[in-house]
Figure 1 (cartoon, helix red, strand yellow):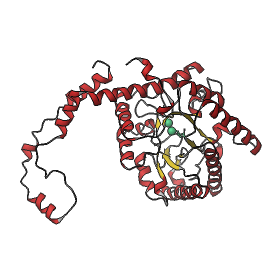
Figure 2 (cartoon, rainbow, N blue to C red):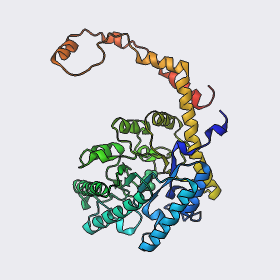
Figure 3 (cartoon, protein in one colour):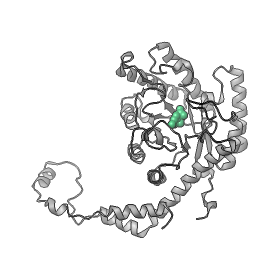
Figure 4 (tube, protein in one colour):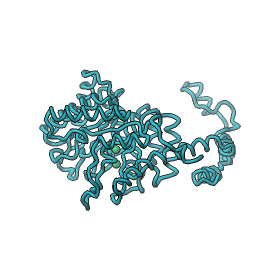
Length: 389
Ligand code: DIG
Ligand code: MN
Ligand code: MN
């Protein structure tokens, strides 16, 4: 396929956080390498590149000390830019991690006054998101964690987290915002350990909330890979549980600090299976929570954004090729079929069924003879990914 077919369009639902292309290149060991990009310029440039929308933390748009008048004027201008460039705001979130007040957490701070302030800030940010048309609200608890476990009982931290989320679910209902809450996990950084470190942990926590039906997950590629997990499997579990409410796409060079790399720049095969899965079973925004290398200038930032979307579309095309490949499909039907009689699906329990299975004669040495041509299957997959098939 020629490169023109990898042209991003709004129908692909690609979104970027203002903070992603707006990242100025600062890191723990170096100052900013790029000037600030104003939100309105970000909206214009991403629209030009074919994106569907932008997402934001409250303070990506409205400075934390803005007056109500300043806030309203900023929102008015931003809404005009969105309309002028046909851009949406599918997701909003709260910055509960940058200001020093959150140095020991927000919803899980040992200080109840900070926990209350975090709740106030989040409700105001939910109001802003709703005003911009967002229906997904992400919670990333970047400071909800610890370095010194003597200082905080994780059970109490979980209770405080639950109390805040239950309150905010009620606030969304009371305001008529019909938000879907998406909880984002990360194992560590900036805290030594972050509570609820994986998407799996989040799925367990959601079940303990008052309104679990309103709450899902926002898995991020790099955050799960920091724990050495297979992101494709993580997302498959979230989808199977009906809880993939949003997704943060980026890339990562395996377990190390959070790199937030351009999507598709490292984990080609894993992200191929992810894109194949998303195209089969998810219709939400494809959000890139990533940023360009610190060494890039502004032109490089737009190369980064274009590259994220291009790589997604290339992998989407590879998934089409995989699904249409006769040899691959025949190998898959061989691997998944069995000559066994119709007794194979376990089905629902009954005493009769249990007795029948227990009494069935099964020859395990015969079972062990089944051929599994995984080498051939994986090589065909690699051939497709390397463009030689
Ligand atoms: C970091 O991965 C977090 C923050 O950027 C934001 O709160 C969230 C939204 O995608 N991801
Ligand atoms: Mn990240
Ligand atoms: Mn993220």
